Amino acid sequence: MNIYRYLSVMATSSFPSRRRMQWKLFLLGLLKIPMIGYCRPRIVDWGPERVRVRIPLRRRTRNHFKSMYFGALMVGADLTAGLHAYAYSLEKGWKVSFAFKSSSAEFLRRPDTNVTFEMAQGREVEALLEKSNATGERHHMGVPIAAYDEEGTRVAEFVLELSVRVKK
Image (cartoon, rainbow, N blue to C red; front, side, top):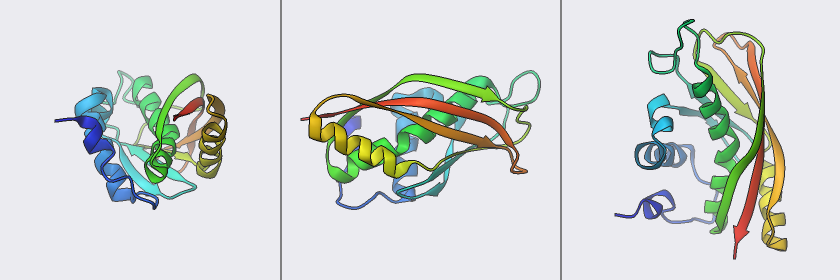
């Protein structure tokens, strides 16, 4: 059984639905990246321009201060920044190699509740993929992510540098 077959089943000509992306996220956590499966993230809001991912504060994601662990926060930021690159590669039927070249984080307060990660640069990620496809080279872009607690207070800000190359 090949995981890539399940992760890229039927590259359609339309943007993938939230339900389809949640299923692919589950499979990715189950079969390829156990840390994602361990944190159990949920896609709350999904569209071509914006994504919101929630990671619940539970025993698995909590540290000794009863707040969300640094590693769980980085998993949420990683997923939020990478979901659009993966979705657009599915939509266009391209084989895309993407990774994070660098990251920076500023923690504003302790997240004592569930944390929601938000990114609204979906169209810029699509333009980056188009540029990489046109040139055949690797291109980079800083993706800002904001993290909010249940009350809507910003608890952290991340900038992950997304590096993409469309394979021909």
